Image (cartoon, rainbow, N blue to C red):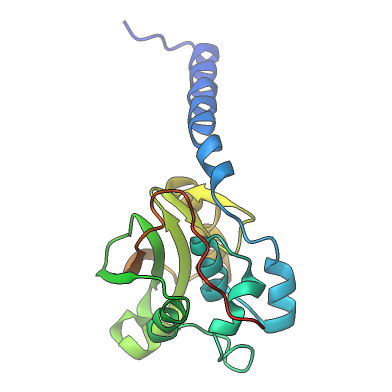
Amino acid sequence: MVNRNPLVTNQLQTLAHQRYAYRHAEVMDSLPVPPDVDLASDRYQANCGPVAFAAALGLSVLEVISNFPQFPQRPWTNLQSMTKALDRLRVPWEINEKTLPGCGLALIQWEGPWMRSRTTALRYTHWVAVYDEYFFDINWPGWLPQPIWEQMIVPQFIEFEPRITGWAVSLSVGISGQADRSWPRPATRPL
């Protein structure tokens, strides 16, 4: 027999949410968060690309921004500039089509009427750092489980661009050596 008492149902839902939060809290707290996102954004117009890059490598944004020489004049990051930045730091990487990496970076494609033109569709993309089931997004000051990212961050994009109908992984860049959680620090170039 199923208990349909609303009070019991509400208590069970609260308990399920608490267990979910506790399960993820330890992992999310152990993942690196760039401490200087606002400063780098103000100084260099750093946005989702360099910030996700810094989070994926466990570095500050100011430590990595020089690997994106197009900033601040051209403040966007395509696949070529992302992989060149990884090469500059001698970080091994591999490209995956339409799947999330275990550890690395994902280029999110916002879906909508612009999908008919590849060139136009590129204007509706967004970089996130990925570790297992967690995303780091410039729009939140820490890592989030993917379902929570979908609930909290995706609606912000839809509010900004109401024609968004969904999202998909356009491509991802898996970063070798990061998935062991030791977060080795690659050599950085001075600013």
